[in-house]
Image (tube, rainbow over all chains, first blue to last red; front, side, top):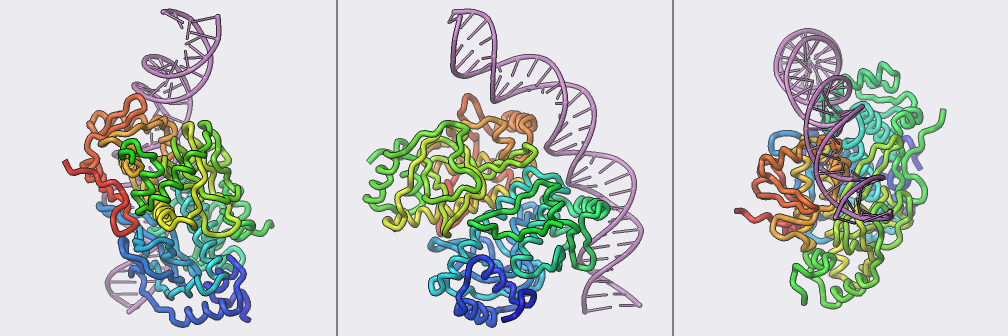
Length: 243
Length: 243
DNA sequence: CGGAAATTTGAGACGAATCAATAGCTGTGG
DNA sequence: CCACAGCTATTGATTCGTCTCAAATTTCCG
């Protein structure tokens, strides 16, 4: 069995969301083996498309995006490695927003939940988490200041990367541009840039060469009054170590 | 069979979301008969509570609310008559935000979806619509101006009231205060007030004595570039008549 | 090494918040 | 029927946060 650090993000995340049988881990690896590469900027899902089967994001970053007629863009949510895409529980479903690859990405079909009860449970928890993240996004956009929005989002991303075994300590690979960040946060890239500089000056974070590290996540979370989402008995979210 | 205008909102909405058998309508009426009244400002659901069974909002308005430690408040979504509450597909679920009654409200247990396939389908579509409304809220808060936010939300509410058979033409009973509206839109009540006056001056809407009417919903929607959410083959949302 | 993309910087304009005060309603009790 | 209390809505003056438009700089990548 590989160590957590080398485990497939999909496997790490699903196992963290629900206990999996060996056969289920096996099925995941098989699915991952059939993953398809997709280039950055390509759409994984187009708004209005019908969604047949769930997919797993094996690697890379993607996002649900809504484009306004006049060119304004809102990034609804991020899709990280290990996330489930296109879960749906009603017939003839349509995607409500398109999903685009933010980086080169690798995608596979999810094993049928009906055959694997543990996986089905993990998918369900994943779905609940998605909703919790969506609500967090609403609160960020509606009631947080620019700096709070940035800190809050980065804390969320750190937690999620931890879930997938992709964060080491308080750092993780961060492939986004400030422009993308701005579209997620309802700000302009210019303002994101200035606020990031402020955060750096206050020694809240380091971001260099595609790698981001939060100096003291627990302290930062306290500072902005952040409460990580809980969706089942135990918090599914990464618990930042108290220093 | 009562006319649409007099039909129970719950029945009107569920029938609009999926075809229901007579026995299912019957079951809904039975459930409605056992509805409990709840006073304005009471919580229907507390954040972190475990959610056992789905509920139906029989009458009155409610909202999912998140409160920040420093008193800021964000209204995540509205819950209107006929809406389903606490749908959940994984064990030991926790509510991710509290739901408070904005007016006096009437709530009942939803009939078990497992016994009624038509209802199960309606619940599923309802769930998909909830997500679509949540995404719409993200876009509103992230990328629309104050005036666009107001128009967009009011259009959404009109559509939803129509679904429940509670709008007549372009008007419906609107029990919210400007303060509540502000908390939903990520604005201050002062600014909401000024923008509403603007909308009235431009003859986009009338709002007097708890009744709101949009002068020309189709035109207003075009003006702000609004696209009503679609979640299944046919649009579940009210189609504004073209004048 | 060269060109495109991303980041950084500056100055000024604008949208929305804030603070504070007034006016209008709604319901309640005398 | 009036007076009062307590919300809700309205108004004004000012401040603050964020946007806009450019331009310069740095980084990334072929």
